[in-house]
Image (cartoon, rainbow, N blue to C red; front, side, top):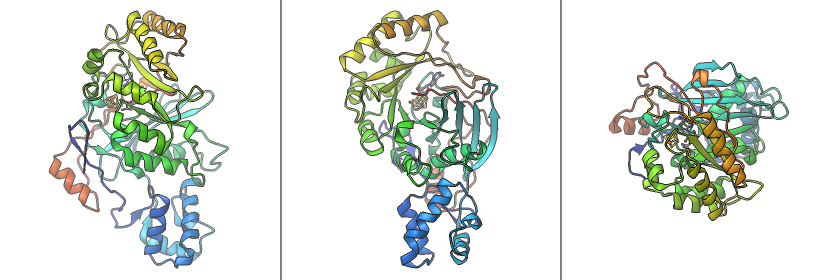
Length: 408
Ligand code: SAH
Ligand code: SF4
């Protein structure tokens, strides 16, 4: 069990690799783990490496779900594999297609918990917005996900599975590299990815592997609310692009709308950005800034944003996100004229500040609208489930989903 650095709730990281019929799910195993489990079922030692490479390629490059389809693997090894393993996606409870082409998947994992992933097609790319947790511990006031109490971290397999599910739905396995529709990934779904660092890292390494899905690290962006101690690790250990949810330029305002700011102040966050490995002008850090009427959207705020970016010498761009409303929120989206003025001031300061067109609002798939109906369970119940090899199904209420998105 992992406790969040802000000391809120314990976060459970279950090992959900065992299927209900006692078979290990290969989805989410890294190369070393795959070799180990293949050796354990009695494949001769000399063959283990080759078989693991073959299986890896079938699972992650071709997207197969049946061992029968692994045509270059001998029949007896295929039989052995099928006796012990499955290659299984979690269930898609609901796939909603927006009239702007956005697709939202509500995914139910083996223990009954749910999270959402959103596919956003654009002219020059297709971005998949991936969740890292069921819920979020951080309770940012403007975010729908923040109203959920955290249920648990997602496993690496559950994170990778969101990519597999989108590729299944978009029918892109036939032509896995040239025919890509998911060209980019943003870790901007439900949850704080840096509070689930190990699983996120493992999942992204699987997704980037050059004999598997082969997505370049340059096409992956991880968004954090500013978990300072892990920001540098994100750069050195994973090497993906960084986005930071800034949303305010003064500590009092930021602490009010993002309680994590009381732990890691603006100065600490911006210093960590200045030190982010691999950030330079060709590969800038993205600041996400939700436009909240009367809260963070004045001309003075825009000027202060420019001053801060210059002061810390940040290779940065700003994504202005019109606030996406959700049931029960006290915030309103800034007036259009004001968003435009804000953007102009930042541009005049020499910093790119495009206004993001909300996508998928009709299916509650826009930034900050995601929420699944998974309930928080007692700590004792969670601990029991994490320890148990076979996950217990839990009661899940009817879904009330909604996510939010921005790309770099
Ligand atoms: N937890 C991470 C990843 C979520 S990314 C993070 O906070 O960075 C989702 C982005 O949408 C974040 O920048 C988040 O602050 C923003 N967001 C949340 N609620 C929103 C809303 N209602 N309208 C617009 N953007 C929102
Ligand atoms: Fe969590 Fe990010 Fe939403 Fe804040 S904005 S509550 S950190 S998902």
